[in-house]
Image 1: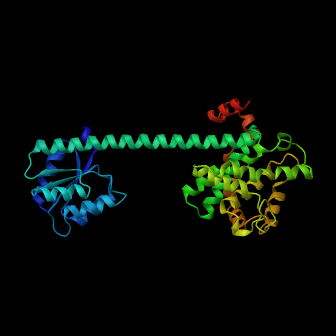
Image 2: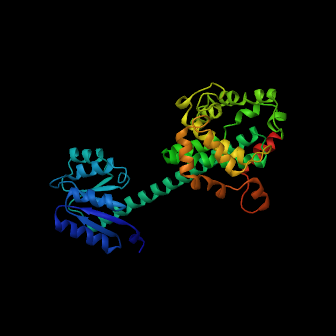
Image 3: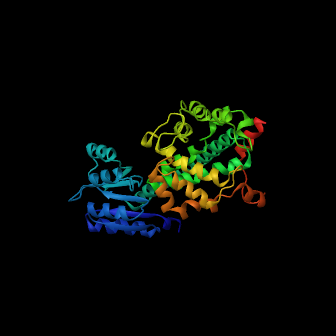
Length: 364
């Protein structure tokens, strides 16, 4: 029976009332649990997932109104609809019932058809609410995915929009996310660091492409020009109404600062450099050295450099986290294919997002 997918909790301090209600509900296929006091109702509701609660108002220990208020204030149970069962249906009682979050009421004594009609109607409404909630979740996820793809796309354009650059942004983003989580940031904040990191070099869009795309070492004059990209990136993003862009502005400006104060552009020291920038700095340097076009570093040389730069370039705590969790950090490189890997497995597993293709087409 279709009703068997619904589970209903019946709460009444009179055992005969519980028996009558559960027998009616079970006769048409509903699953039921029953308790005879408020504290037990709260315990059951916290341990089980119910589609509906039928709740008596006049009970000892805790009244139905108190139980309802508690359940509606609890994030785990606040969405479960509650129908009050009451023989006291005066105006003041009903006002209180709705005020604490009740969804409906049935006056005692009731007849079978009325009970089933009210239950069925409330369950249909709950099903509709769940469908809407799922659509909102899916839509929110789609918007978040599009936003992330857009940020990758913009970041790739700023650095020359080559496939190699796109792979670099992916790896820096994922390594930054892993380091952020290991540092102790929660999922939401670590995801912000990951996504915002894709714009760490957005300021390169203001630097001549002949410098940005140069295959050999930069001259001193070119290096001076290149360093302007951190301020350019910050200025581009700092006034955005989008939180993620404002975070990206911080990272863009500060990811070349050094822990000992010898970096640029402001020569910030230690905790004056934002945590997000300190995380991205290590991820960016590690990846840039791993795939450096001018100098081919061995893995041992890269790791030794990061150790040497502990407390100089990099935050000592983040360096320790990196080395104490080296296998987890470097697993990013197993999960995020390089440009060469993508070329070898072209046209099968990974495509650049459609929004990036659109952006590149418009730019060309």
